[in-house]
Image 1 (cartoon, helix red, strand yellow):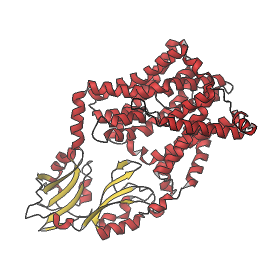
Image 2 (cartoon, helix red, strand yellow):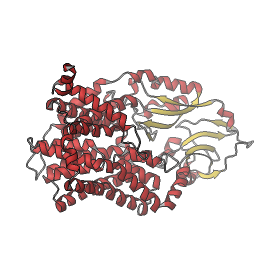
Image 3 (tube, helix red, strand yellow):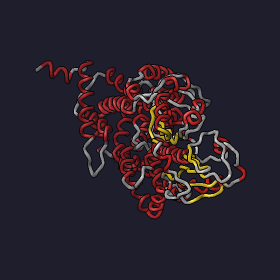
Image 4 (cartoon, helix red, strand yellow):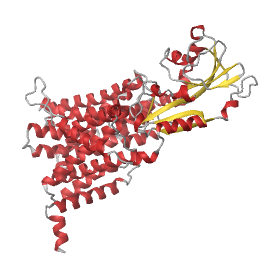
Length: 556
């Protein structure tokens, strides 16, 4: 049995692997258990590691450092790769307002961190650790630790205390956002009901319009679409007793009847454009829209052919050549406008309506082969990590700061991941990974990081919590969680009139809190909280990782 004791206690490479994997397995199992309907998920790995460190288990320092750093690099890079395709599009139109409010939550938290640091005397590294825990963002903690090491490589105690502070603030960070949502829901109950009605008004809507606006007579559909920012699809046209699917070059005439797919909130704008809306009566004898329905199908087609990776949708001329309509493009969970200038990427899902033969032909052009996407594109992963680590180690001189700033192993890889996910296809670089494969890499990375972080900081965790300083940390962490959320949530609701569903989704995304999002989704009928969460999460995650380093660099 000596070999078994040696494997668990001797600080060797074998022992490091055994302890880290055991901590990860125990933490993942316990993370599934719910307390009052709330579970910590993979974050419980952090606390399992703390318990292992508290029990006196010591792991080889070099192995532990490598595991933590590589896990963090893998997580932030694959996160950037996943959100990159929809990152810049999420900043446009309605996403700008939500992202600005998400940034307000972040900057208010940073301001509170500095104010509490100056008023309470808590060291800045500990305050940044408390902030990372309060906003449930361990990658930001990793980035801040790297920044502290740049300034003072020998400050191992500061690194440990920062992780301890994060661990102390984390549980209330999860619960605090949920409590804030409950407060907002109670305070604005009337608006919550109103947002439910608004949600139903944004569902897909079919309406019939009569062309009686002289300014669009004899103009093609593509020219007319340029006259408005609203997105809609002219599904069918009735003229001279015949129903057809129009191409983008089809010219509209006076008294043409159009069947248009849009959202109900855009109906008034479309009415102004075409001139008159009619009540759709599917039983009308003079227009039998159903006469063509038997010939139409709707399919979701997957872009899997490398030849069309990075190609503009308009250059394929699919609508004109095959008489089909592309009603929606979904990329990384975000619906995009199917505009001619949209560059297709491997993994895009296009919803196409048209005759069966035409849709099948378009499917062959775009690929539509799921098996082809099952093959991992590991070149992009390794090249991206290589470039990300190089970028992270690049010294950046900022006026007024004596020490050059580095993006570090958290900032560099996430930037490269976002850029490769967004622009890689333009250079015909296949960066697509299936959502399950990306999630696997992300969770593997963050679990290894959390296990190592917990083991490293566990030795002094409980003695820190059960003293006056620890209780102060708990109170500060709770303030950093709930105050920014309540202030911005109130402003968004009362001043900017953001619907309740989008408001709580934005708050969960800005706090990077999927556990709170799960609760938020139970308070509304639709999926608006998830959409708002996905809209603000990429930018919020990026800003939190970068700002945690900058606050150390600027104010230490």
